[in-house]
Length: 352
Image 1 (cartoon, rainbow, N blue to C red):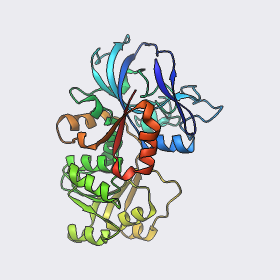
Image 2: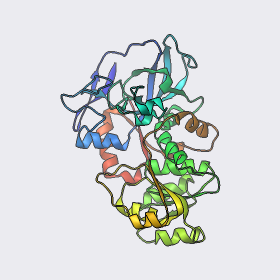
Image 3: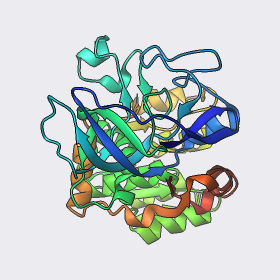
Image 4: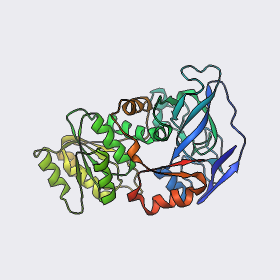
């Protein structure tokens, strides 16, 4: 079969490789769509970083090294079912939770497998990927999506990242939530928080992304921090109280500072963005407001409820698709487009 494989920095190729073989407890999936993630851009332009094995290395769980089939946000249709599999049948459309875990570390034993000590990702660490013709995965990672179109189903993975963050932050009906950054994860987080019944405020520098937040209806209020005093505006909108939850989906120091100042006393700062370097925290603000600060990585048991939000019409993924391309054009129309024009894109989907 054909598969787009990552060979190293700025080196992806469509190769001919053997089809994966069905095993007990697995399903074989004919792949449909794959979304491009920010981590894909880092890997393509800057080179391998864990959990992707570097040159001459192998991942401890997959025992695979470069090249690996690329892509971890993907959907497809079940074409074969292995022995011992329940709840899935040939013809089921699915979104894949691309986890690779050891099932033996303390995090896995507690059910928090997203914090696995040896965690890897399908499409990054080996185990196949979304940019092939077929993949074989453990049945527990294949989530039926019912009548959700397969292009939208490819976005269940990033939606689950945001769902996990919003859920972990304890967002509930009646809360006010401030989200720093209206990139894909910020917009998905806004959609989930809105579905939970919260009032959502987004702060974003990019005019195109602010407009996308308004056009998709995921935010009740959209602020431009270049012109608005974001903290003052938040206090005005909340009657001087501050927001219940602030979600950092930007990974920028100035955004982090704003979020801390805009939180209410004993509010929650939920970190979901990765930082290229260690940020500085305003410790006095954190102390005097007794803020709760917590991180969020990936997802654990979040795909099914995220899918349910879409099926119930509480989250609309269709407007967040901003491009569909062929895998042969993935560098120019995918990676370079997102690097050079990220403000006009949310999610570009790729088909092999």
